[in-house]
Amino acid sequence: MFSIQTLVRPHILTLKPYSSARDEYTGAEGIFLDANENPLGSALENESFNRYPDPYQRKVKEKLAVIKNCSPAQIFLGNGSDEPIDLLFRAFCEPKQDNVILMPPTYGMYEVSADLNLVTAKKVNLTPDFQIDIDAVLKAIDRNTKLIFVCSPNNPTANSLKKVHIRLLLSNFGGLVIVDEAYIDFAKDGSWIEELSDFPNLVVLQTFSKAWGLAALRLGMAFASEEIIQILNKIKPPYNINEATQQLALQALDHVERKDTMVKTILAEREKLVANLVKTPCIVRVYPSDANFVLVKTTNAKGIYDYLVAQKIIVRDRSKVVLCEDSLRITVGTAEENAKLLEQLRQYEG
Ligand SMILES: *Cc1c(COP(=O)(O)O)cnc(C)c1O
Image (tube, rainbow, N blue to C red; front, side, top):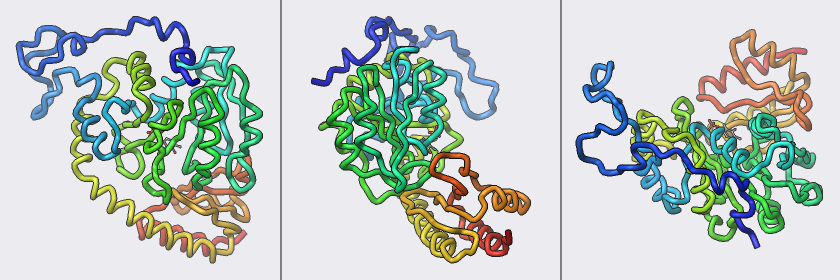
């Protein structure tokens, strides 16, 4: 039987968390002389950010819970997705003892976080068609394996990973399966958030950085059981989401339709881009995309990358990454940007 109490590091269970002024008194009105804030206002002209923000971002979570069809208590907000990724290591992985499983080629931050926390990252490559090598992953699990990172749609390959495989991991692994859905708004499949009630060991990561267009705000989301969220809350920096970000996120959440319209536009542009890339001589192959970018195999990734940079068009050279030989990752831009890219690619000789 899965038990979060036995999975979490023992000292985290007994840790006495920092108790902020806003933890100890949560009322909205009164004379606040409890947090050493500036009572006069701020050095800014019009806005006042003199008070500490809500440490649990209650208003943002309430709105988000409606949109995501979950409970506010199943949501953790972080300073980008990087923060919940790091906190999961700190909560569940004993340095120099525990390990996690990653499936390259994938998002680089999982390994950085593992290295930073002195946790071994066991790598089980995706299959040549960029799907989970399920037998190899199940075989790689040992008693010290605490986390498995699944990125779907996967960065940099752009495809979604098969749900049957992810379900197999969830039901055959006693640690946490983290499904990173940074690109879920661009995918055909629905979110794993729907399945939270079936899998107590599931953590879903999403972000405001991609479809919502708010990369600069640094706001990431984790969805999981209340128990897991409570652990993340216990160890996070007290005021990890600043007030400006909370206010702007609230405004954005009032306009889901704007996000949806942008997603539609980007998807239409992606289809046009793909249709044109497949006809471009220096492009050998365009991999299927469920994201706002495409991975392409080229005749000469380094040469094309440098040529594009000289034209002030910057793509991502992924050719040094396993299974991505001679491949470039191209973000879908505006219609004009994509047209310029295609024009330059057509003229490439080499
Ligand atoms: C872009 C991206 C994120 C988002 O990171 P933030 O820190 O929230 O900006 C997370 N995971 C993957 C796989 C990504 O590509």
